[in-house]
Length: 550
Image (cartoon, rainbow, N blue to C red; front, side, top):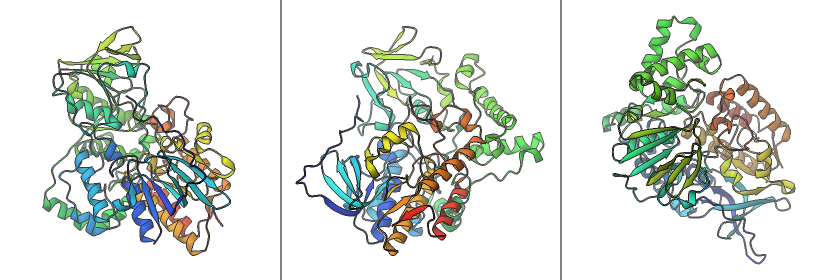
């Protein structure tokens, strides 16, 4: 089952007239919807394209069992309209996927966006015409479009690694990838089910389907530090209280390290006694959010001794829940990397699943998966694990994958896919030198590639891009392109900032380590959301130095 096979780049017949727009937006998720809204407000002719049959992006495709927010509903929001914020009431602190998809449809309908979105359409190629200063864009159906500006809102986790193991097509049962989940419910009742992967997505699936399966085999390669989610229901009165804080929250999330409403406010680690440090960690643990990771002690990202103490705090909590079972503790509790240097999942009774009598674990470090056979999964020791359903929670080609699967060619015919196969570079995650009038959101080397509440960072990037385009138009310029010198300087700053942290010493999708052959570089800017926003604001204030407008 490979539903992500890419359509070939389709060259339009010479006689095919191109549909003309001022701008084309790729994607109709959180960023794409807002980008479409902003450009329409500026009076531009614009159309958005999405491979899905509806809006939502991540929240359209990832409809697997248990899929839900891990940013609180009060700050996973659009900030351009107080009325829009107050008029939609989330049911709980961390809403599930169906509710989030409904919310994004509500936004699209409220703003009448769908009339300017073409669904069920994948962008196959985009080639820059230097003579006309326009992008020639082709869809997978062969439609030919021309636009002055191309804005990629493709998502940073939107390219599932679906073709992961040899023999998948021969499996007699069903294979489901979490990032390509079907709309029709999957019946797990009484079935022999395998889940491959125990990252944030795999954890949500495992804890959700465990009560109904006949048996469950969990294939574990990389153990994860986890935090129990606290997910209270929200009443109308609760939401009214959050609504009253709209302007404070809007300002706050732009200034913090990770775009949440909490930050590293505990004070320096060295200034506290061991008892005071533990008290801070206990308080944030009890909050049941990502605050323990993103609002405790920043020293855990830099200082190995601090990292070890915080990590051990979490390990103790996990051992208690696993009843100190030595085999499970060894398999499920990390010891070779520090808390927070990988993505930290929130969960609900996930660890307790492993204590069920019908649950079996397979250590994929000791016996890696070799192939999929008709009966199930064959591991390196020759054993065939017979199952009826395989759930693949094996991750994504993060950050760069969504753009690399489009045939994007800039000046002099240069290929973005070829360039990024050698080295992943951007100018602040907003443009790539050599690709005039191509703007990006959620791209590598910006905090929106990870380490950020996504609505905070994506909206900020959309606003910056829109204001930059407006500035160029007001100046009578038709082309905007990041200079090589500016991109070089940003890459150097990004790498120097990352090198000071422990994150670059680990292997995870943050570093591109989950994709064979992918160039190693921290995909997300780790200098802080507030710092990044200040740098972007300064660029706008000073007339966009580093961006050639002509």
